[in-house]
Length: 196
Image (cartoon, rainbow, N blue to C red; front, top):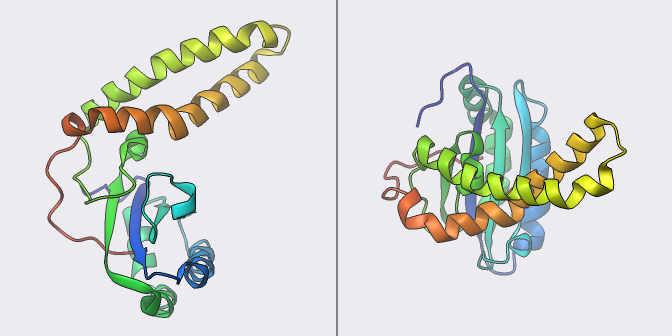
C-alpha cells in the first residue's frame, strides 16, 4: 500500500524487546516519539506496551505513528535525530521489526501480535466495521437515550459517539478481528518496512 503524498499516513510498528529491558526501552521510545512530535506534519503517536494488550506476549511493543503525508513521514524516517534514537534503543531489542501501513478504520482490524499480514481489503474493512458499528450504535442509543433525553443534541451526540468509538476500539473490533481473521487477511506481506 502506497498512500498518496497528500493524505495522512498511519503506520503500526512492532518491536520485540529483550527480556528484562522493557523498563529501559519505554522511556527511550517515548523520548523518540516526543522528538517526532516536533517534525512537520506530525499528527500523533501512541506506545502500546505488552501490559496494555492482554493477548500480546512479553516483550512485544507497538507504536502507532501518524503524519499528515507520506512525504512528512519519510522526512522523519530520514532524520538524523531518529537515527540517534534508534541507535540508543538497538541494544535493548531483538533482531527485526515489522511495520504495517494502516488506512483509515483499518487500524481497528490490525492484529497486535503474530506475523504481519497484508492490510485487509477496504471493502472487507468497511463491511466488518458496519457489522460492528450497527449493533453497537443500537445498544448505545437504546441504553443511553433515556438518561440523556434532556441534554442538548450536541452533548448527546458527543457522549454516544465517544462510547461507540471506545467500544469499537477496545471491545468490538478486536473480537470481530479474531472471529473473521481468515476472511479479512490475505497472505503475510513480503516486503519489509522502515521502523519508527
